[in-house]
Image (cartoon, rainbow, N blue to C red; front, side, top):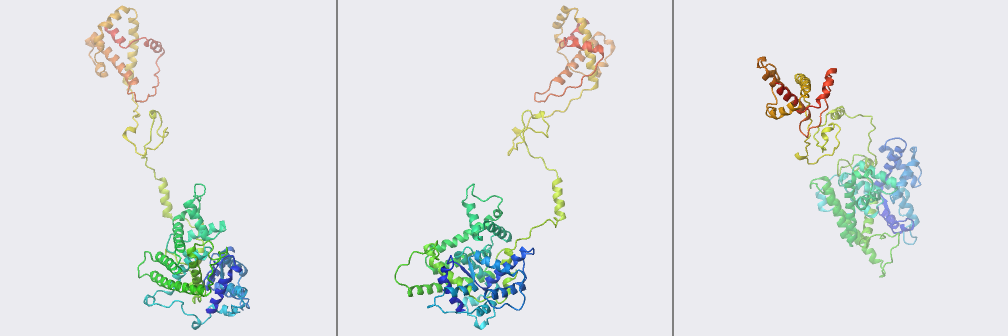
Length: 589
């Protein structure tokens, strides 16, 4: 309505007298309803209920809120429970987001208007109540500020989808003017899709609450710390936002691109067209021309471009008509162009005028389409419902167990033996260690054949019982021959010279064949039998003390107990040399 636009225009001109920033945004009727729904859901959650609220309760609280703030008589029905807490949460959100609603505009107008220039009361509280309640007839509603073009008439799309797409466009432009607007950030965080669903928004909301900052500042501070922070300044690995680094970085990068366009192009018409075109390109990326979102984005882009050009022309005419030819003074701290690039000062003013017109637009007739959780899906798998975004996702409490199939499979995986394919470096003494207690367990990335250990555990060698008996008999005979040979050392020395050749004969043979030789051979057979027994004893000694030098020493075999007489004879064995018993028997013949 024109009278509402007059109040907004006066407020925008004189708001620096009562507000700290001239970039304060005005919430229209639809935004006021969504904010009230969030406040009621938050109060319900504080009292132990879920983060939900019925549509009927929202409409009842909406009527109470308007009549209370406009100082009109209360309705006939009783007030809702916890209404004071709901009102407090509503006002707190407005203050935290640097925003005001249309009811605040009405009372600020009375305080800020100039008596000589501005009308006394362009709109009464009752008229504003009727406008906000949606009771104004269709004939009284103003026509669209942008005339319909032939292209917009030919291409039609769902009104609900077009409203949602237009809200996203305005939310992006809203963040360029006022970065504290949490509602605008919630509507644009995952549009287009950046894999930032409810869990990412919940983690971001908790981070903003812990640091007592806005959502936008929480996002930008985290991304800047990740990109520019050093070892001691980067966020911790346990930070919940670490899981959403890519999506948050893409979101901040897109906003930086919009800020760059805003600061580099001085002409508001060209700059505004570039901003809208950049948002449109992000929304329609990967969509076909027959998609409803594509059609709504195309139509909204044309309407916003035309309206930005019209607002720029109006502001130029106003500036030329009221100009004095004197250069403007240095901007104050509260001015709209404070901390803004020179090229974007005029563009920000045009964008604020555009957003003010959107706030003064008539409310949505179907409140269920606005407040229901079944909103059009613009990106991802979820709709653009603000209530679902601000609601924390359900956390598993452990009451519902894991499916039986998954539990059985996990248990089987634990019981399944793991293959031992890992080769390890073993030292040169690895043969003396047990396999389960390896001294070195360093894993080889590229093992070669040269690193395979050469020490192999040999199989224990068993001595037959027959050999043991023969060895014991040889031992007894050698001791007896040693006694006889001790009496004639000269004869023994001569026998060593003569018996050198027989000593190099056959060293091993079959013990059974030797034992079965005919007794008629006489002395010759006895000599050969003694020689074979001596050779067999040497072979046993070599088997016990010989072997490869790489083989580990074997444990000593338990000593065979001998009679007392044999113990005395065994002591003299140490004095014998190799082959002494054989030579003695030879010379005895």
